[in-house]
Image 1 (cartoon, one colour):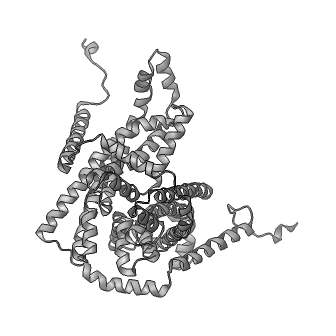
Image 2 (cartoon, helix red, strand yellow; image 1 turned 60 degrees about the vertical axis):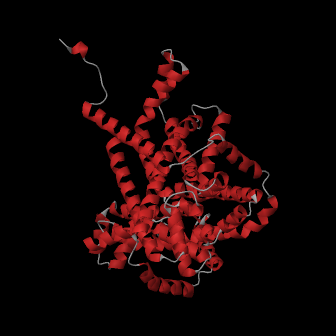
Image 3 (cartoon, rainbow over the protein chains, first blue to last red; image 1 turned 180 degrees about the vertical axis):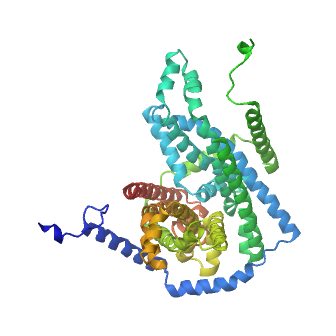
Length: 266
Length: 264
């Protein structure tokens, strides 16, 4: 028997060993090509990081004059307010869209349209949406609300639609068989099955929206982002650090609140 | 007996009260927020018209513009790939620090947590603003920004994976006389390898989306072209760029989902 000559080889997901090495070589080649593409020569990185060390001094300590501190507070409240309002509008809008994007509840053409809408909303970064919103309806928090609402719909409707597709159709049939109208079927057969996830998802999205609302100001859509960009453009780096600390603090608080609420109400 | 007077209720009084209070707080917060922003919408009915007007001006997309965005598009993909691989390399030590079972002591544990928190709380575009100052404008600043943002994400999730590993295997490798590096290589790495690959691909997918906006702060990629077109009010060119971004994002998302299903 030739068994003595056989050595153990690790199993792999690839169909053959040759394919495996070809894929690895391809990946390595891609990274090298990318490195040249973006001009990432080690010398420049070292030089950049070297100037980072001296630049860190310019960023410290974080300082804000009383007027600047007031401005941070005011614009931060605007960010949080934008997130609050658009979480609500986003969720309200995503409920009907989620129903129309659930394969088991919606006719095919309607399903396709709403899934398409969800894909579009998820594909574009909030900044891109914000730029377009600002061009369409002007600078200010309203553009921000529109942006975050749009992003919320993509996220929320997708997850809600997936929940709806997983519901137990048996209880829906039962409600219908008891003689319920379509509205009653929805209300008593479908809604009770998705309510538990609803609260957790809302708070989770609120948390993400707080993060988003702190940056879209960079393109003029309201909130603290505009202050940050101005500070950067004026080379007022100590003020930048103060703003960044404020953003990190707010993001952490939102994350904490969201974690606590999700643990208690899920 | 008074049992027939009792009604079934889903929650006891305390739960109901806390739910009611929570809903009230949320309602007050939303109403207060709206009033705080002081948005005087004089004619709310004009908003859909304005948005619709903009979308009409985007049609038909300017196909000729495609040739000008091929190069920035490739650059975007390169930024995302390099940023992800850079983050992967840097996030492994961070994950080892931030995992309770591999971190040397309490100080290093909190250091790991601090790195993860700061990296995750600062958005890519803010990191990009910072690195454009350091490296000058261009794709390199973008790639480093992407990397710094991803360290927290990968470090956190990888750290959680490391906390879940079977420590018996690590002990066994150590008992066989392995050095620290060998313990890492043969005791820990094989256990987290599927997660490592899956998470990196997932993050690469997110990074493609993030790197489309880096151009706004001068950090390279397709964003440069997009913002140029927006500022020139060349809406048909904007539509072309948006369609291309949509295509790329959907393609990477399916590729990422496919590959992740493979390694899992």
